[in-house]
Length: 219
Length: 184
Image 1 (cartoon, rainbow over the protein chains, first blue to last red):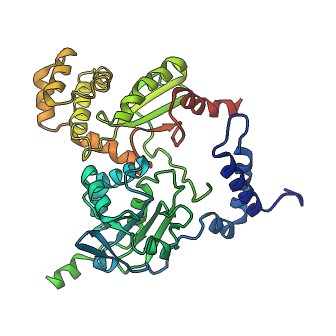
Image 2: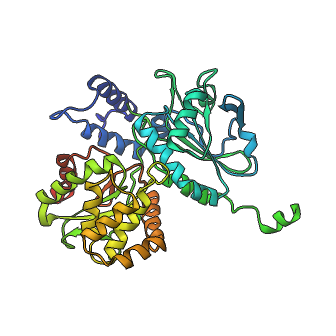
Image 3: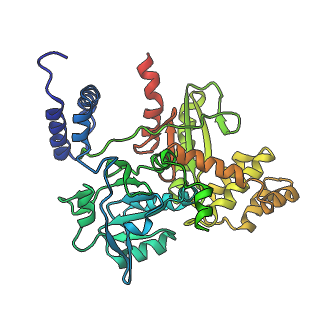
C-alpha cells in the first residue's frame, strides 16, 4: 500500500454509492475486490474506521437508555421492569417481513436458553400494537414485542438504531446486564438475520447470577 | 447498503461420526444443512440439494442436521425424531426423503405409515417415538445450529462457513467449489 492508496473512508463511501446505484452487483461487475480492499484497510486502521462502519449504535459500557413502550393497547413494558436481570433488546425492521419472521421465530425457540441466564427478551420495531399482536399470535411468540410507534422510532434513536431514511429500526442487538449497562451490542446488515449465537456468548460472559446465599437472604 | 458487520458464522460442531452423511467421507467439499421437515423452504431446498449431490458426485459430502421450529411447525419435532428412529434401523435417508416429499402429511399416523413402507421394525419405531428416545439428539442438533449462527431454515454451511447467499443449485455449487479453485 503506497501513497496512492485511497483512505478507507472514501472507498467505503464509493462502495455505498455504487451499491446504491446498481442495487446489487450484476454478473461481470463485482464489488468484491473493492470490498476486500476496504476490509483489509479497515482491519489495518483499527477502531476509528470500524466505528464508522457501524454507524453508531450504542457501545458496551454505556448505560442503557430507559424507555416505556406499549406491547398491547393497555399494557406497557419499561426497561426498568427488568432491573436485576439481564435483558436482550432485539431491534428489527418490521413485523411480517420474511427475515424478521425467521429472527423472532428463532429467538422464540432459543428462549429456554436465554432463560437459563435469567435473561428477558424483548423485540422492538416501529409497528403498532395491533400489528405486533397479530404477528406474535401468528408466530406463537412467548416474549413481548414493543411498539416504538409514537413518537415514531424515538427509543431506537436513543440507541442509535433508527434508519431515518426508511423510517424503520435497524436490525440491532443489545445485551444489557442486571445493572442496566449495555454489555454487548451488534448491528447486523439489515438483510441478514444475525442468529442467536452472539447473544448467547454475551450472556455467558456476564457476571454469574446472584449466589444462592443472596437469594436465601431475601427468602 | 453498507451497514453493520457481517459476522462470519462458522460451524462449531464439525461433521463427524454422529452425523447422517451422504457422499464419500474423503470428499473435498462438505455441505451441511440445518433443516425442519415441516418448513416449506426446506421442502423446496430438498430437490436442490439432490441436484447438487448429483452434479458434484464424489466431490461432495452432505450432512443433514435437525433444526425444528416447533412453535410454528407442530409436526417438525416428531418428524425429526421419526427420521432418527428410522436412522437407528439404518434407514435415515429413506425416511428423510419420504418426509420431505410428503410435507403435508406428517401426523403420527403418517409417520407410522412411512415406517411401515420402509419395512422398519414397527414395535421398536413406535416405542422409540413414544419414549422420546431421540429428543435429546434432535435438541443437540438444534443447539449446535444455534451456536453456529443458524438463522432460519434452511441454513447451509459450505465447508464450515454459513452460506448467506442464494441457495439455488448453481449458487451452492459455486460456493462449494470456490476454495478448491483458490487452492489451484
